[in-house]
Image (cartoon, rainbow, N blue to C red; front, side, top):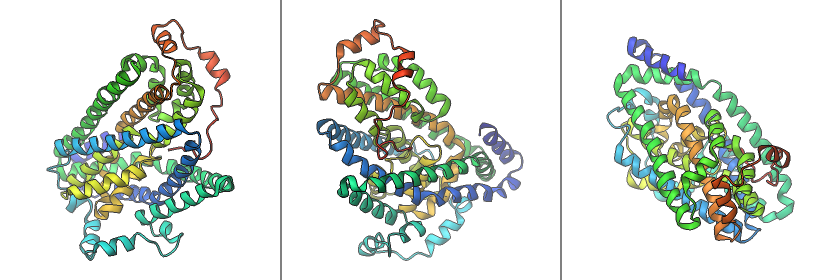
Length: 430
């Protein structure tokens, strides 16, 4: 991916006219991502709603966890919007005419809809048509209806959840195959953008990348750090040092899910009770995606600004609400974040979807910060939920952090080789 991005930049600078002709390569890759939007959203939302029933039935722990996840996801999304509006990373590029000419033509031919028409347009002609037509809001409505219906069925709905889980694995396998083409798509998109704008594109991409890193840093060390110190009396730096090996594992894979078994084992060793860990950690991997939330809003603003058509305040608020729902299940699998980003733009400003190609080249670098922030958020959440429910042994935590009770890697492998108290509905590969 790095070589492809570098090659695209080089071609764009050396042969700008030729580079512009490579735009269809990036467009083709974006179209493949767009193809997966509806199935990704449908599966993740159905399984997410199904998991709520199983998490909530344990009572206080599940309710606190779900409430905390919702609040923190909203805070992360809002922070992303605020920072995106402050730094304006895509301003000055004005790539709308060159990158998404087809999308703008389609948008110009559209008729302005009234509020009633918009609301009626959310209702599909059939359950299946929402998926086949690629209408994101229709897919979201159908997914919510199916999820709540399965939830109401109780245990009789388990076969449906298992079936949707199997379909989701198929969908993500296809998405993984598509992401094998990411270097080619990144090469074409980067070459075309640099060929059209020169070094301005590089400056804007660097601005959003470093702005995103800074935002994640502030969120983790200020927001999460203050919460952890105030509620549990634990120093964030000490906790992160305890989880150092897991952070290195995530850094090498760009997926927070790779460290899931180790996080479960280490949180139990840290002093959080097994029931709290067993509920909070797996559920958090679907519902507590702070890094992904920041990325989705900042990337959406960047694409809109770079296309010369910024989102209005009302559109940003509407997008935030959409992302609160759609972001549940947008981490862990490479490409799922891009699909959710494209889905958010498709539902609000279809003419901007082609602009997702602008961010493909740096998505790999941003995915590491996303995964690390998601992981830190879930580790902190586990300690906070344990503290609020009285299921956190602070003396054990102090012993662990002081080195008096070191974590036994061998024991972790023996006892947690299969961290499976997770239901199919909760263990979503997101």
